[in-house]
Amino acid sequence: MKKPKNRRVNQTKRTNHQAQNAIGHIRIIAGAWRGRKLPVHDVVGLRPTTDRVKETVFNWLMNSIRFSHCLDCFAGAGALGFEALSRGAQTVTLIEKDSQAAAQLKTNATTLNAQNANVVQADSLVYLRQRTFDSENPYDIVFIDPPFGLGLAEKASQLLEEQQLLAPGALIYVEVESELTRLKPGAGLPANWQLLKQKTAGQVSFSLYQRDA
Image (cartoon, rainbow, N blue to C red):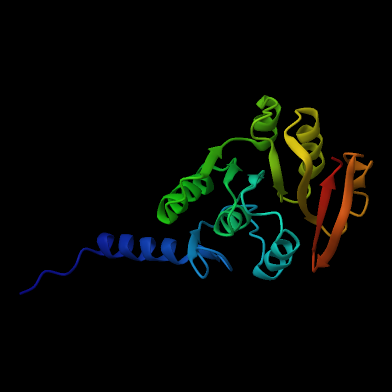
């Protein structure tokens, strides 16, 4: 007579299966890794940029992304950073505070063999405060897409200028909640940033700024 299967083992298998199902994906929409899907953990506050918004953003950046040095300040799922690498960015630094999300970013970078991706597990504001001016590799493109409701976009923007981390004419993408109408150059954002493009999609407002050369 066969022994009944261990219920605890079966329960563990079900739990693991449910955990795997809880992991979503982001999709790279163009470039060297076009169509690749990368797993994303369900982390509180994680809000990957949608394909629709991402396509618009990278259309804006089309003529600037190749050979650029990029910074993804609140990387999350890495939707913007990995897309930039796929489209020819020379380097991308992805900063993510959550340990689980950062670990997944490192795994995804390894999966893609993205040797020019630098994943840093850190509080973005602390990281920016500790950075010093690098005349050799200032950032050409910066993505600022923080968790909503914490005023992080304003703080990160000011630190980028205070620490002199941006190249002359650098492009800065900012994604915030759509009701945050007060955010503009001279009011939350550095006065030497010029608004180039802006759109709203549902609860999200996304804009592209250029730093005065």
